[in-house]
Length: 245
Image 1 (cartoon, rainbow, N blue to C red):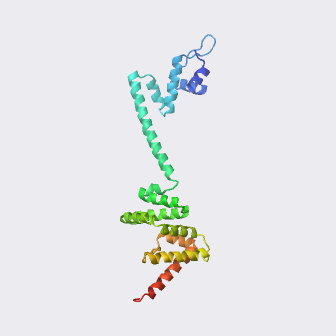
Image 2: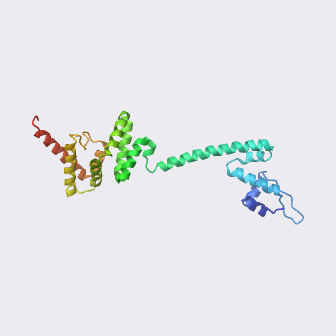
Image 3: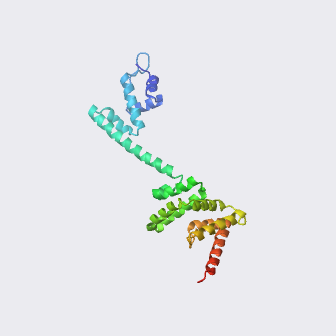
């Protein structure tokens, strides 16, 4: 026979919890023996473990009482239902965990895998997270405003990764954001960008109408303003120099 303390220890609960179950009618309270102590049977320990386990899974105490008095077949069916509900809850929590993990980057929540893969390739190349965020924001805007342009955009970006010189210039532009506009590295970058533009027959590295990425960087980077202004001036000068201009 067990004392209330021993019973509580077996079930992994407190004596106060055992007494609460007495009060709500879940666990019968035995009469005192000749020594004045209440002694509990092994069945009381089994019932207490069942009560605690069901309560831990979220089963209301009012239902636990009915389950404890159910026939074996009915009890087994109820346990099966509870288990199914727990599995569904686990699946839901697993999905919540996946979505919470995605919040760190943010792009997975709103961009298709192909666009996310492009951002990750940029990360692998060593592009700064500042530029990655700007690329992400532009991708989100593009997807929302012109979804039909996405396949071509994805194709062009993936092709661009195969051009070592283009990727070198991209990384150089990324690093140049914080340069002084009159840094000699800016001068070299301007020359390199102009050479690339000329070699690619006018396929400029500058958009004709600045995208939000360029607009934001231009507002924060005097070096980029000088780069693009100088490239635009040189392109205009080249056009004027053409025989049919």
